[in-house]
Image (tube, rainbow, N blue to C red; front, side):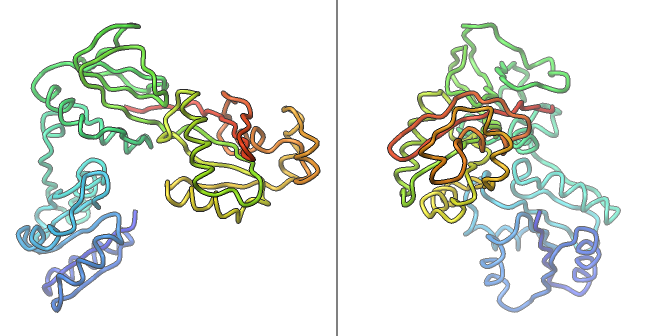
Amino acid sequence: MKTAVIALTKNGVGLAEKIGRELDADIYAKKDDFRGLIEIIFFSYDSLIFIMACGIVVRSIAPYIKDKQSDPAVVVVDELGRFAISLLSGHIGGANRLAARVAAIMGGTPVITTATDINGVIAFDELATDNDCAIENIGVLKYISSELINGGKVSLISDCKIVGVLPHNIDTPGFGQHCRLAVALTNSTMVPVTAEKILYLRPRNLIIGLGCKKGKSKQEIEEALAHFMRINNKSMLSIKCIASISIKANEQGILDFCSEKNIPFQTFSAEVIKTVEHRFSSSEFVKSITGVGCVAEACAIMAGNQPKLVCPKTVYSGITLALAEEEKVFTL
């Protein structure tokens, strides 16, 4: 986590240096053009620690706040180090935990105001972050959290292995059951229940193996992959990485697609692929170009942590895709 500590006063700077050393954070001690500084650093750090009054911080960051899925964690500390206040992005951004850590460094008290935390109920946005899951429809989260805070129950549907004990207010519905509110922890676009509202948490545990002809555009790759995922009933948000042969390391269409979707791109040399290609069907045409007879399936398997091939190679116009899936462990 890339962190910045910002202070304005002499006492604040001294405290900033102490916190900065412990967190390996960048320190900003600035009085002139404070607002200009905030405009620059707000989008450059995962977390911001301000040593000053809350009012100053609120007015300064207000123009740049977007949403809880993209805002950095913001913690405010008084210059005597008595309190560390989680101000913004407490769960997804990690401000609640950061506040606790900063308070421990100072010997102060963390101030946490998120309702799920103070009421001791499960916070699915925080669990999603902790378990590397994407939240598909975060607008539903408020209904889930409100139900739990007010003593109600929520159903959990999961394809993942869950470690930990489910709270008493979380149940697991049977196949075909209708629920009022549910959380679906799955990479599948199909769930075995119906509900008035379902919060979808997408575990990033799918690996796409990709082979393509030279010059395939971002749009062509996106259209092929969207169709491939749709016919396999899998969410694009669950893609952990895309993998291909090393001669595609600079293929612009792939690079542009991965950059736009923020999906890691990994490549393997022909020599490495040869160690596993015997497990899959081979193409003499592909071998004549790349030196190996199988790219998509082999790369999908090698890029994951003991994944299973769940969809063998599917050929589009000059694009070949394969899908592998890791076992996902979700810790409560």
